[in-house]
Image 1 (spheres, rainbow, N blue to C red):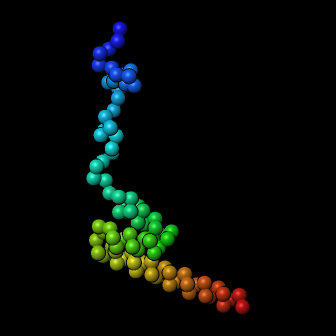
Image 2: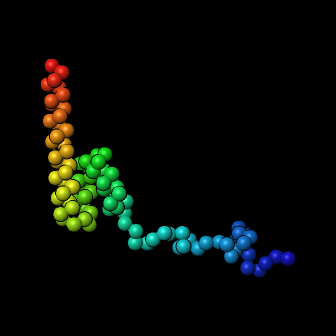
Length: 90
């Protein structure tokens, strides 16, 4: 009648149960703030955070410099364009 291996609260299909250690996808997975997707996302959406994340990542130094120069140039042109639009409106 009763299975001696079962305890109260056990699943009825013990063979389908997963071990808690198997639920982890990868133990050496990068933190979210060191993943390239999030670094580029923040470089585009909120550039100050993106630059900090890029410099703290394991990117090559040339990629860090290129990303920083790109953001600085984009901010410079954006600022100058806003000044030009304001001057045209006067």
